[in-house]
Image (cartoon, rainbow over all chains, first blue to last red; front, top):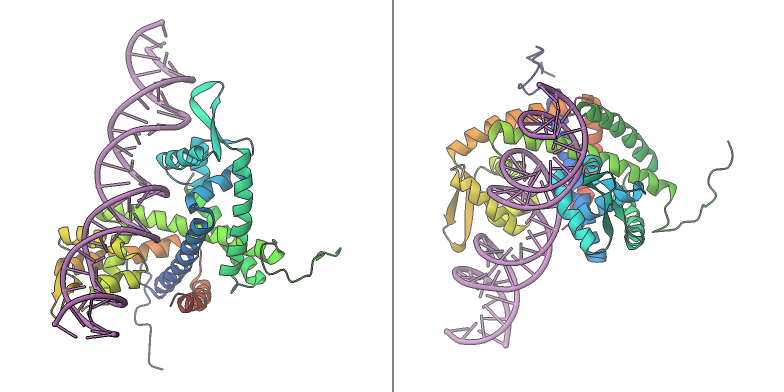
Length: 164
Length: 164
DNA sequence: CAAAAAAGGTTTTAGCTTGAAATATATTTC
DNA sequence: GAAATATATTTCAAGCTAAAACCTTTTTTG
């Protein structure tokens, strides 16, 4: 076992350290797994429901907020750009899954809500979605899943504070 | 501690089980973290280098394969659609970062390679990229990172077998 | 070898994504 | 209360994405 750590200085950035290599490795694997699951979900939503992940995400947000959300709240919850939501809601509205309701006191704003049809469609999709996740992540035991959840949760919290 | 598992039957799909709830929870958190890191990387690449993540991914692949890759190999390595790579390579070629080389024996195919300029630009971006990851995932200790890597790695392997 | 099938790429279409500019309405300030 | 500022949303430009249609060129097959 020859000497392996010739450079023990505390370089704060740019210089690749053992730790940064480890994190990079983790990131690449995590990204790969995430993309695989996402692309599976995309395809299954497309084939089974003729829908997309962004549409599903919007409906999921609206399902959680029964009273509806303003466009800006929607983009805030989903953490996507403002103009982005406009197009997705347009298409969902065309299909009769959501409605834009005028906000009484403010003629700029509008409230987006799921329609009855929207609620029904989403309920079916959400159930399938959960089963797909269960299948795609079957390699994680429930215990592992819980451990990872808790860890990611801590990190998300940090991120949210930054992004205030 | 009252009894907590009223439904011990082996329902294979659709019925939400405790395990599926746990995996769903994990997925949502993992996705949130991944998206946060990705959007940070996108923004930083844009601001610091006027570039994008897909461009970076293509250059990273070409940096690993010094002899170059065919378009189809490139899309295979990156796991994106065939026609997708065409546009990205077009733009990288316009900027002089890659070149398309005719394959001697086959007039359909072409080999894509990084130019000298491409190698230099990528080297700088890759170093910044690693430092950004290190910063964005600083909440993971190197040991945790290693553990997560190993776990995701096992899963990726399974996915690759499916996707053959 | 000619027809058929396969392989390598590009183009097209429709949708998603962001950031910036534009529009309309509200609120604040002088 | 008019002008300036801020807020809510949409529009726009540029790029990414998958899938499908479409050329070429190569390989296979009868």
